Amino acid sequence: FKDCWVDSTLLQSLEDQRIENERLAEAAARLAEELPEITQEDATDDVLASQNQEDVLMIDYPEE
Image (cartoon, rainbow, N blue to C red; front, side, top):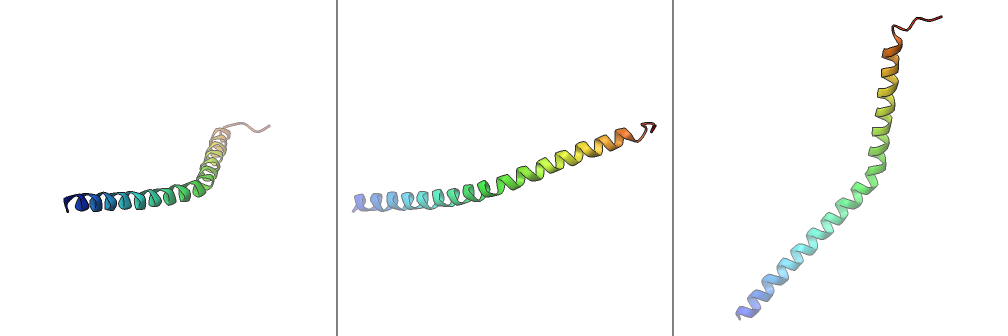
């Protein structure tokens, strides 16, 4: 009877681990789908920041 208890506990732990692995795999897949968008947004922010920096540097630049 004790062996059955150990086995059922082990099986429950394995099932819990399988469920957690599936949850992590789904979260990783969602993150992988969002990553190009996040990278693009960061790149856009970097471009805007450099453009704004150039604008600030040009304020005191004499026009000819």
